[in-house]
Length: 388
Image (cartoon, rainbow, N blue to C red; front, side, top):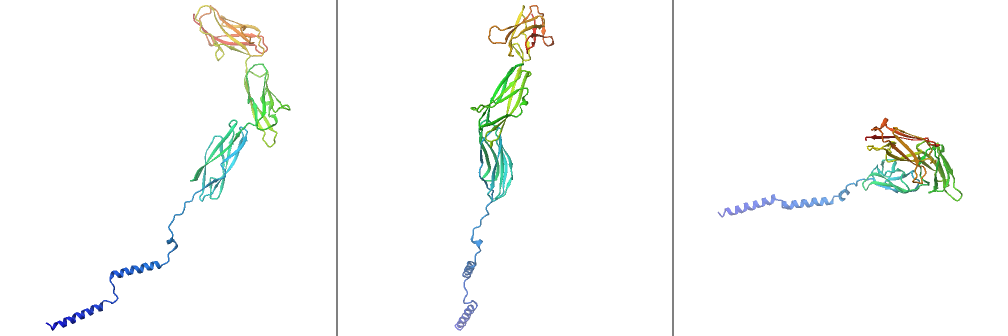
């Protein structure tokens, strides 16, 4: 047994020597090798140069927008004559970096956008808009606006305004000449004064005096110590009965030649009435005298007042006739007043007047023949109903 021990020891020694031969002397554990490999890669990565984009944070490009710029949005024209028109031009620039789009928006009643050169404005360019206005209002402050819509996110609309003061350059007093009631065949004259207001008057002329025929017009310049012109308008005796209306154009030139001549239209109107009027609650608008229904026995009396409009107030009666013949009438000056030209008309329905309805073609009338230079007769129809 002891003989075999040395042999076993020898085999073990040889086995140990064989293992040492197989395993290299510089071998290390697997975990240590892996860690060493990562350190090498990290060191290599640190040694590589970095690109500029890798060292800066990533950003998005800013969005482009149009941007509106205007020098002014208001214009004061000072003082202008009523009904005068004018214009003013505004400038719009695009100082942004995207195209500017413009669109016409709302405007006030007396202000309009007369022109928009370009609806699209490129960056760095400009366009112009023209505002036009008319002074339709009476004297006093004036302000009107117009709006331009844009695609500028910071200024979606631009409000343009024009303002000033409306003033009549000259004053006509009265501004319209009215002859309320002119008896036919009579002559009347009324005057209009033309006075300076916004400027001193140099001259006044009538554009076409014949346009108001048969009216007569006379222009009188002011005296040395006055500034007012006088315009007299006369309605002649031959003016026909009824309403009339005429227009007379008057040109007023200022002393300052730099100012514009004003053209004014004077309206002249009136009514030439008949030489008389019949006044009574029973007188209808159609000119028929409506006798109240008669139901009682005996004579029935009705009346009216006749007012003479002609300047000749005295009436000389030639004859009075009535229809039907059971109606009689008298006309006398009214004694209870000092007013000239008032006459009292009495109409009497006879007691024996037959029953019936007297209307339309079967109605009656009153005719008063006169000896008067312009009123030949007074005549009107009447209607009545008798049931007694």
